[in-house]
Length: 152
Image 1 (tube, one colour):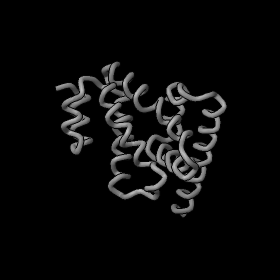
Image 2 (cartoon, rainbow, N blue to C red):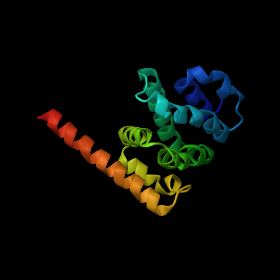
Image 3 (cartoon, helix red, strand yellow):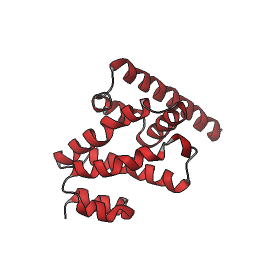
């Protein structure tokens, strides 16, 4: 069994049949991203803990894929996840946009987001990508200040 599929089965046991059915890493991201998008449906915010766990697992799997040995796995996450992330955020209403930014900063971290800037900006105009990163920077700064206050 391929490493990407094995890792996906561990990360997403609830999607076992879909993971076994897909024939490529790209097809897996086609299966996963609608679950990511549905999490941020405005009518569902704030979300359930179970949904937040799924989002965390999607981010963690994306991080693993981006560092995988197989170039097809790395390419698939760039196309299937990172290209869609900023586009989904910027296509959302404010509450969902803010939550996507918050989650991306929390799970990926700003340096990793910047490392994927080319993919993040692939589907959106440059000025919108700049706005996305400015908002991510504000969120990262705010989170850092909160963290510093807790340590005191």
